[in-house]
Image (cartoon, rainbow, N blue to C red; front, side, top):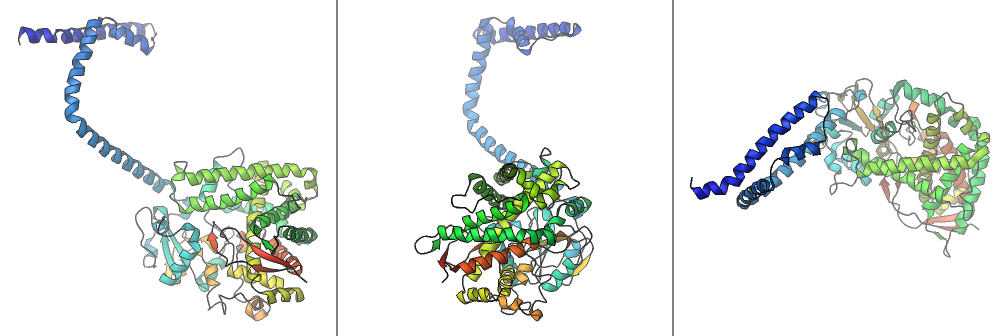
Length: 562
């Protein structure tokens, strides 16, 4: 090495010597301080580490390595960028694999037994892919989840009376479309019928112990469900409750007709019928549960609380659909659809509580409200039950009424027959349940092995009974695609009804409000027919919102009956 080279590297060597000395001093200093059980802040240690190096040594160290860095950087920049891209993709892929693996381990509920799929080999169905199963059929661009009812109709035509799907993590699900198999499953109900819970709702409620002590009547299983069921629902099915509430229903029906008159334009068109139906659902539900008329059907009676509650309920159903059929990353990440579910859940809770507080002392006269308050349950459980009953009643009643008005509105002669023969109003409602049920399928989890569609299906398998499709089968109902209320006026024509006409469920898990709605809808139809001759403006489009609902705004023409 020449003298010039040695002189060039002298500052660097000096700096290295300074750093070695500084490290030794720092180590000695650190040892002494540990002996005295005293530790100085990290910033002070850094000061001591470099404190013995003069500024010339520091500058030489920095400038020397800066020169080396510049030389090397020019040669490897492109390579480093390519490697960064590669590792970025690998990191994202690894993250995705980890998330999927986590879901695979955690997603399957224990009461599904993780049923073996070997016994179900041979059952026809769409191609199942690893992890995603057959859910790829509902990916964007293939089939919209809002048209799920059409998807299952297509699957029935393609695969026949029994069809196998695989849910996320390849959980097998059996779909039944024929009356024989549907009846077999639903007749075989145990004391504690199992049904798949709404996973995202159950997950959210478990995260809010300040509001909920359970996942609710819909989602609980076994003895916990049975206790809630036997404690909360008897008042809804009591003949005394129904008979005492009917006079209020007639008053509400009169207010409904008056509001329709005031909402028409010069041609008789009511362009916001679904909004008025929301107000009707709110009024009836609050009158039943809170024991007070809230005035939602009065002119100018639409309040922000009522409007926001109705919209929150609708958004809750849609968010439930999207979390159920979408990629279940909401279990590990707050996805957009899960955030919408949380927002709607909290809005429903807060707005319903506001209505409950506004009712004040009137709840003392509500048989339903007082029965729930006296139930042997935690206070949070009672509050949650009242809110759940209110939100379920609003949306279900609204959609059922809109379907009924549309079907009857296509036939002016039928409207006159309803006025002449009171039996027709109930027959129209029943036929509406057959053609346009708000819930068109029913899920169960088999608690014992069964033979379905010629295949042995083991216990623990989720089974979906598509009674809505079976109700449109010519083998079960003659002229199945035609709206014919007369079919329900003869005793010999309704032998298929018990296990096919079940829009509110059947057996021990039947909807507690079933009997009330079956009394409310005929009264509303009779009052509407006696006041108006009404006509649907366009063909009804239906979409799937976790239940079936009219698509878009609903408009009808209501002309005074003369």
